[in-house]
Amino acid sequence: MVSDPSCPHCALAKDSLAARFPEIAAEWHPHKNGDIGPEQVEPDHMMTAWWLCSRGHEFSASVRSRTRAGWFVIWAL
Image 1 (spheres, rainbow, N blue to C red):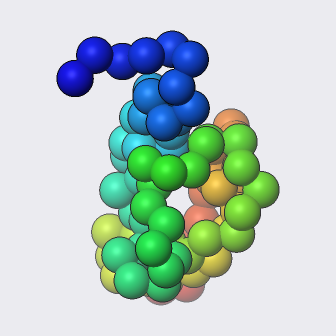
Image 2: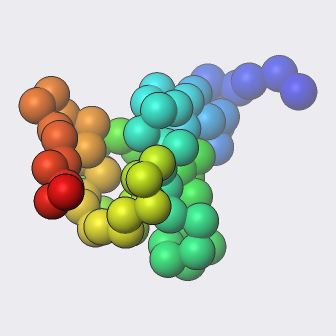
């Protein structure tokens, strides 16, 4: 399939959270965000989403806050 720059679906596929920040998209919670996936959200979106870190911690944060410089989570040991 050829990408059409005038198509909003093609544009989002190229600029989605999954396309631009795959390491962050990998933490997208697989069940708590309903039918919305990281390939359907822009990296600068203010939507609050659920995330699941590689250590199994669940947390909520806006998509925008996850893609801005300086983001980090401190987990209690």
